[in-house]
Amino acid sequence: MSQSPWTHHRSSSVADDIEFEIKGQELQFVEIELDPGESAVAEAGAMVWKDASVQMTTVFGDGSGGQGAGFMGKLLGAGKRLVTGESLFTTVFTHNGSGKARVAFASPTPGAILPLHLAELGGTLICQKDSFLAAARGVSIGIHFQQRIMTGLFGGEGFIMQRLDGDGWAFVQMGGTITERVLAPGEELHVDTGCLAAYTPSVDFDLIRAGGVKSMLFGGEGIFFARLRGPGRVWIQSLPFSRLAGRMLAAAGGTGGQNRGEGSVLGNLGDLIGGNN
Image (cartoon, helix red, strand yellow):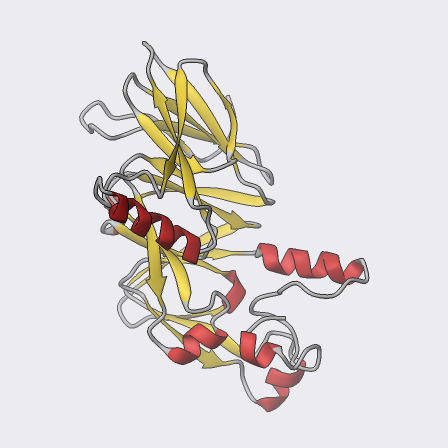
């Protein structure tokens, strides 16, 4: 049995509960156990393996069933996913046999898979784009718009983030090591904009200058920090994939790519607009 801290056993008193285990360290995958008739939904291409009794169906949109049965409802759900950088399609895995069956999904980048029970978070989670990996069927994947212009321009994730709604389990992928902070009312936390992975809607997300002019120009931490004010919960990732990709390109002598939330303005003046380096 894996020593992963993320293991959950299904409660018979909860109808939509699922049993799962997250295995591995830097390159993780989540193994979900399904009862007959139960389903899980995942990003296209995320599956690692499945038992033969688990049937796979590709659907248009997020597969939650909450967008309505008509074509326009499905089109709306797919459009939301496209805006957040996801595929137009998701894949639904349903156990059509007897007994228990398992299906496993893997993160496409080095880091960690974080399991979150949305009912315990008030039913909603706001997270970085491309972070959704899999969920119990019924979780809706939508979009969250940053209301403040400055936050959208310089906040690392842009104006649009991902929004997960529902009352079941959702699995999100984050870079490096994950840490969680619980903020009391009025408590503030300053985070590198690229390292902000997810937060609950009760948290106020704004920007604050990264010190004086000298620090902003030569400190290597970008122009702004993300200022998070409680109450609520915040998840921080130690290594955003964009930062890893930027370092790999730099080491290879290439150009391009994004390194959100970090770097000096002397490296690329265009980052003043994009909030990236």
